[in-house]
Image (cartoon, rainbow, N blue to C red; front, side, top):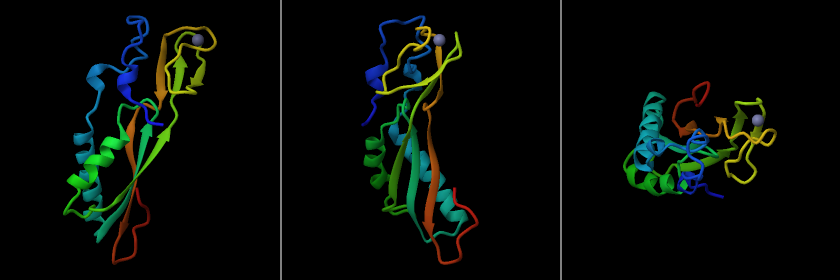
Length: 151
Ligand SMILES: [Zn+2]
């Protein structure tokens, strides 16, 4: 299941619930994000004297606007002729957690749709997890013994 931020940018209840809705300005574009991932991976690979970067593990929050298919699309293009060429991208989705600012209830989203508080029906809720996109770890191949940890 892929979540598209565009599907959620209008909730029909702006004002009181805009806290729920990803702000249009925060919509990220996958190409610079993918370039950023590559830069981090290459920096790590160089530092670790990697002969090749084999895998990248990426975490995408359920409410992140990042579309993994787009990253997958850009990846082979921008990683070509680098240490990370042909590296496999692994995407892990983490569920969103919302906290009601009125009654403090913390709840998740079953189907990815933003909902009001299940306890008090307030729309004054904040996203406390599942909004971010990050590079979790990188796997490399190297001639020398591997470093104590990879991340
Ligand atoms: Zn509540």
